[in-house]
Amino acid sequence: MSSLYSHVSLALLTDLYEVTMAYGYWKKQMAEDEAVFHLFFRKMPFQGGFAMAAGLHDVIEFVKRFRFEQSDLDYLSTLQGNDGSPLFEPPFLDYLANLEFTCDIDAIPEGDMVFAYEPLVRVQGPIIQCQLLESALLTLTNFSTLIATKGARVSLATEGDSILEFGLRRAQGIDGALTASRAAFIGGCTATSNVFAGKMLGIPVKGTHAHSWIMAFETELESFQAYAEAMPENCVFLVDTYDTLQGVRNAIEVGKWLHEHGRPLLGIRLDSGDLNYLSIESRKMLDEAGFPEAEIFASNELNETLIADLKHQGAKIAVWGVGTNLVTGQTQSALDGVYKLSAYRKKGAEKWQYKLKLSEQMTKVSNPGILQIRRFENPQGEYVADALYDIYSDLSQGCTIVDPFDQTRQRVLPKEMKSRDVLAPIFRKGKQVYKDPSLVEIQAYGKEQLAKFDKSIKRFFNAHVYPVGMEKSLFEYKIKLVDKIRDRLAKSKK
Image 1 (tube, rainbow, N blue to C red):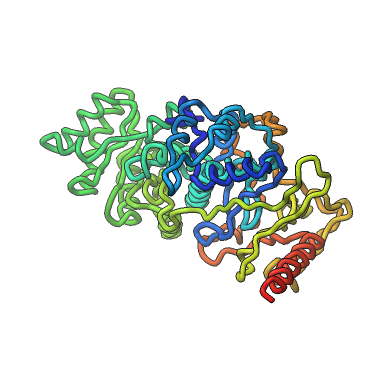
Image 2 (tube, helix red, strand yellow; image 1 turned 180 degrees about the vertical axis):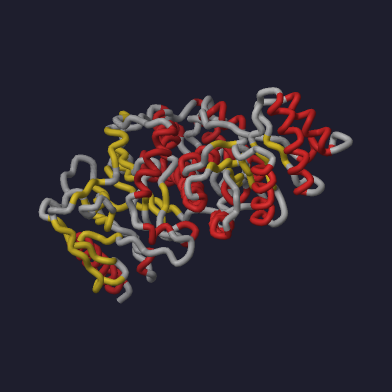
């Protein structure tokens, strides 16, 4: 994995109940029975109209290395039950020692759009293996998807301007910072301040200097001059340590020295105050002094809505530095991803038993089947609707989709409409069949895909709900299964 843990066994990156359930499957001779699980979320992040899938690369790397090493087994052997006896029998630990990954995995490629209740990942194989993957797949997918989505929202707000991600100092730990840098880049950021992310992931790194550099000198002008002499090709001066507009004047004076020595003044950075007013005034000063190419960088707790507002006001900012609000998700601390069993069959059996989790809230009733997403587009190449369907359903003649929360809302998607299946094969019988693209390719793909959706789903407030429906026969089967389970429950209470 492209992380701090590339040389450490991650088999125990799981919750204890995954291992106790695995033990139960083994104990009841169910370990090799086949199952299908789907990983999905129920609520759109940031109350927006889309999410951008991310984290698949780390899922692939985790799965490729999934095996229990002796140190893992030694640790598990020390765990005790409430009665003080070993939690797991030695033969079970021997079983884990010889466990080889043999599942099929399908997933949404990184950079593609995903919507509530659509599976980001589908896992099919021996139930014990599927179960042991749950917690890791969720942690590898949830956070990355959250931050990639935030990055895409920031990218939309800047309208093509450069974005520097510099949230390292505010991120949730070292690995959180690394994951956030990668996901933010997928979402559309240009570069990161995180040098470790640059080394590990190949993301371009950018940076200027801090207020401490200026404060270390007697005057601001002296500090700018010293920096220009030390880093003549990297001069973006932070101008708000004392008096912002005077800082711009000092930057211009040193910029003239740079020009005399054949070096460029790359720009100035604003980090406080009225960014709209200061950027406009700074732009005038730079242009009048003969530095029209010098860019204005801005930072200071920016997010997509603030950036959009500054753009609307006419701010003359060319490069946006976004930190805390990007790498932490800020307004949303986590994506509510879940991992649910949807199909089961005994080893050697041909027929699947479709499963669902029942709830008094329809929003928490899971979907049965072995699911795929078909995305339809109009003649103009714009995506118009997604159909959630079972892989054994025939969609060759088109399909009708039903809103699962309002079955009066239905839509016919004719066979003539161009469409594609979104979930891609990643592993087959434990072997990787998917070519993992580069980060630059993923970022480009994400921009391309997001551009194919109507701008109404990209609004930051009151975003349009993109049509995602269940294929009609699947929806009808779900309702029958819900009724069947409720009837069985009612009879058991008599």
